[in-house]
Amino acid sequence: MRILRFFGWIFALVALMALVHDAWTALQGGPLHLSAVGELWFKYHVASLNFMQAITQRYLAPEIWDNAVRPYFLLQPAILVFGVLAALFLVLGRRWRRR
Image 1 (tube, rainbow, N blue to C red):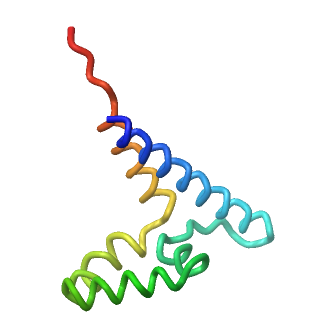
Image 2 (image 1 turned 180 degrees about the vertical axis):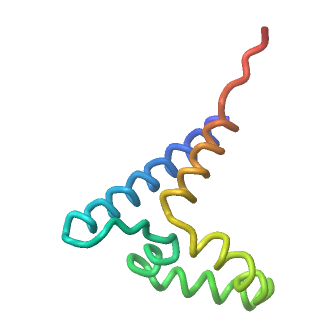
Image 3 (image 1 turned 30 degrees about the vertical axis):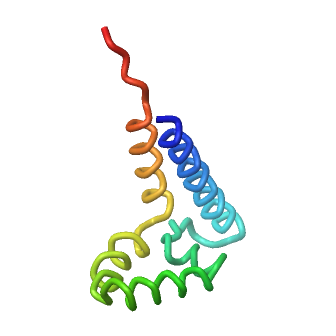
């Protein structure tokens, strides 16, 4: 279960980085805006975003990208997505003690 906890902490770190990014942007003079996953992904590594879109649409189905990945992942606030993933992985990675 260590691997689940490891990924949980990685997701928690990414959520923290998204929070810092949003706070830094707000401190630069703009309003507080929770950045979407797709917005940050496009800003920091557009090539991998385009690659994932092409792979999903070509080899799986275009409907998966348009009807699932985009609205339920890419358009959601990054801190929410990665915070939920972190909590899920950390809970699943807990060691259950026998009584």
